[in-house]
Length: 252
Length: 203
Image 1: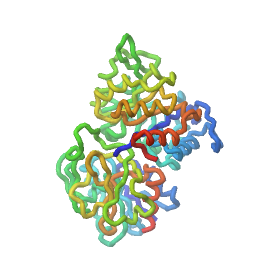
Image 2: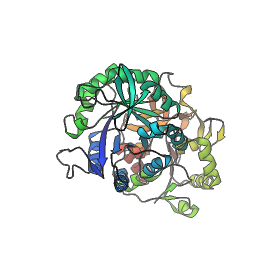
Image 3: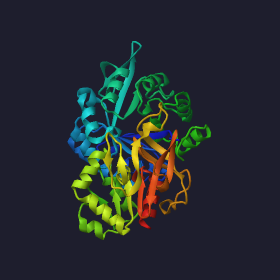
């Protein structure tokens, strides 16, 4: 049986992990390579590197980091942030990324998903959507959640999948950072609309939130989180043990 | 030394790195002499069957792979590379493969439950078939490996050495004499995957 995936997300700026971390045995807590290796050893099923660099110099540092990580860490690696063209796909795939996630880049240029999927295959293209309720309607937000595009989210996600996106990361702005659990209502709506893997993001605060996610919505394939892993509030190995105890299929 | 065949498809960075991680020298090459001198061969592949088999044949690499296989050199096809070893594929048409493994490639939608997602993507457990293959000597039943595929090896029971369950039993790995194939990605399957590559290198 296919297992549920647990995915830590690392925000990287100018080649360093942005949020502070504090793990025993980790010599350099802001090194993405060290942290990626650590998470892989703890049982992470996949890693997401999110590039929040604004400068060209930072971009080059980011691809160096990817190369170093891909030399040491042998689990799937997804890259997001600053992906606006097919050339950006090429740049990160050559450095060892397996999948590329697009967000604002696809909003600006909806053909990007189609072009990238045609060139690299659907399995390579991930649509990452930042979604928030506005007057009771799910709306897509751009620019890191700061700008309402006015687009209805479910239709947007269906369109992206129709264009060749092979996976969806749904980040609920409403639950992000609240640590009160994933946005089950929003996730359910997306799972009903598409037949590609859906990754839940935004809102995880404790192990129970993951258990509830997979038990309530068996169609969700993976849970993604950042700070709760970085700050050691939830250890990936404890999380996976508990999921297994609860009868949820995981890789241990 | 391991020769990873380069015929213009896919990204071979992780594959090359995975051999480096287990201390084995691997070169990415389309040089016939280098491939003939290599101890073992890896046939990688991502993308569509039609495009890949065409590139493999046009580059002359198909003939090299077949002649080295006939000489008894250990080789392993990975993902689409495994599928290329089969007699033929029904991926968007009907195409001849290398004919090193008896059977054919068919869509997983033929056999899996209709409500399951395609591609079959993620970590799934291995179930060994027949006598445990030497490439699995460091593994135990139920170890997880990483899959990404929409097509699978069918009618290949006599060469199947492992399967995985996705509502139906799907071919996960095959072997015929010195020719091996993995549907999953050992280079993306953590320590389990690396130990398969290590065992292959020790053949």
